[in-house]
Length: 149
Image 1 (cartoon, one colour):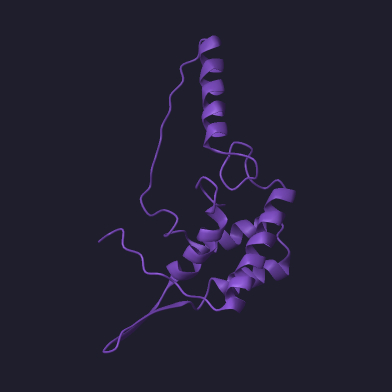
Image 2 (cartoon, one colour):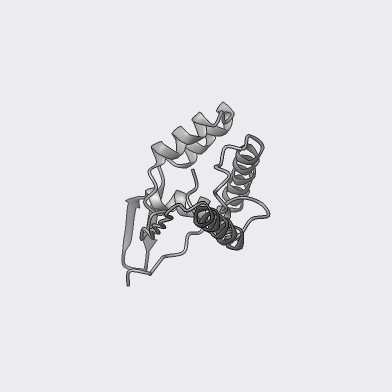
């Protein structure tokens, strides 16, 4: 049951707002070149193949110059769902994100609730994951998932 994820239903207005925010954040990040050049996820026209090619080039360069090359690979389970919102907001601020977009994102990530309702039961819980998962779905759609900010 650890892989079970409930669906999240948003109103049409919420979906439109979410899509507009994603487009504006992506535009800001890509036009300011805020992402590290070695980050291949969340970048247009890049893929895991580009990441593997860059890794192979780096290893071959190290071997040809007689250096020892070591690779450490980490897969942190649930890392995206546990992203710390203050850090995301700080990264947006540090990148020079327009104040209105920063404030809208801050508002979008706060005061979120997840509700489960059946005929006999209604559960309501404050949910950090609900907002972040909604953003994540749009951000990683068709792109390899790596660190966002």
